[in-house]
Every structure is written in structure tokens, then in C-alpha cells.
Image (tube, rainbow, N blue to C red):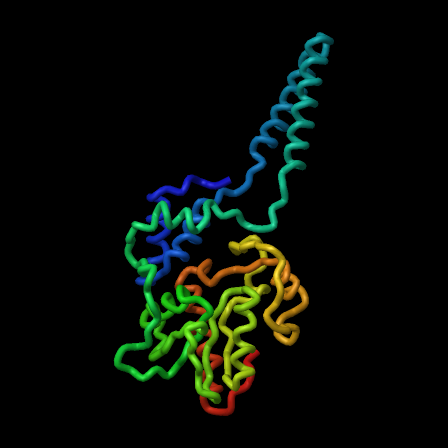
Length: 281
């Protein structure tokens, strides 16, 4: 079950994302809106049936001397109790969170909205203007890169360069970078791919163990293959999670939470700038 997704709900979600001066992408707005549209599953109907059944039995006891009335009330009471119990047992056990609508439908209905803080769909990542970047952040998504670049000043990251790995960017061997990625097969392999190229990569992205569970908006797809052997990086349960087709996008995080992860990775990157690159744990 979910609340209707209305313009008011979208605007309310946008205000929450922008609070404090943060910038956010349309995909972040989509996930935030879906989260606000969720309703908590309830056993209220079943509980009401059980309660009414108990009440009818108690009333029947008052008429215990009138056999027909007593039998009728007790029978109805027992039937209601059994219906309520069966209703609770039939409720499906959901392992994930249901999204209120698809991203394509969200864009077609609300793509023309321009709430405060929303980045344009064609926003591109840039480094700090007029300042030589001292930190490079590599992402697996143009949207993630644009969001980080737009919030670099607000998050006090300093002079940074934000790039998307598919842009053909080739870092110099011996440099050190921060990697921010989705919890996906390609994303989880990105840091190790850079390390194999002689790049000191600090992993600031999402791992399956970070996002597995009902608190996160998990996308479930068809079973997939891993782009490389990740057994040295991920636990067996995490590998199985990825192989099953699950993934979680960085866009599910509000901007302040995503930038908290970048700042934490930045604190682990600093030692690498002073020496030979080495894999970060």
C-alpha cells in the first residue's frame, strides 16, 4: 500500500532534501517521494475482527440461558476470531520496500517541476573553479558525480575534481582517489579495477552489507554475473546478494548522508597522498 503520489507530496519531499542548502538530483527526489508515499502495513482489520468476535462471545454469555441466542452469538464470535487470525497469517512477508511508481512515470508526471535545490537533469560535474583540485572523486554515475560536485562547497570538501569513470578519464599511476558507487556488481568492482591500474583507491561507495534490509530501497532484478572476482573484497553473503540481481543506488541517500560518506572516505585518503598507493580497507 502507498499514498497517492501528488505534486504536494513531491514538493514536500523536495523541501526535505533541500533543507540546509543541499542540492539534489531528480532521481534522489524520486526515491525520497516514494519513501514518503509508503504506508506501514497494518493488522487493524484482522485485530478488529478478533476483538469483535471476543465481544460477541462475551455478550453470548449474558444470554447463556437462551440457548438459541447463546449458540448464535458464540458461533459468530468464533467465526470472526478465526477470520481475523487467518487474515494475519495470510499477510505476505515482504523482504524489500515497494516503490510507489517507476522512475519513468515519475519523470513524465513531475519532470517539469523545479523546486528549490533541484539540479537540472543535464547537470555535469565540475571541479572547484579557479582552484587546482587536490582531491579526485570517481563515480559510476553521472547523476552521483553532479550531486557531489554541486554539494562540495556545502560539505566543505575543499578543492575537488569529480569525474565519471565511463568518461574515459585516465588517472596518473601513483595518484589516489575516492570512489563513490552504487551497491551493484559494476560499482563494487570499480575500486579494485582502479587499484589494478596502480591507483590508490579509497572505497567510499555502497556495499551490500551497508544497504541490505527493509530500511533501504532495494531494486530486485534478474540474476546476474559479476564483472570480476570480488571474493577478496566482499563476503560470501554480499556476493550472493549481488548475484541474485539486487542493487541499491547512491541516489536513495539524501545528499547530506551521501556527502558524509565522501567526507569519511576523504579522511582515509589523506595518508595515501604522502606515500605509495595501497589498497584501502
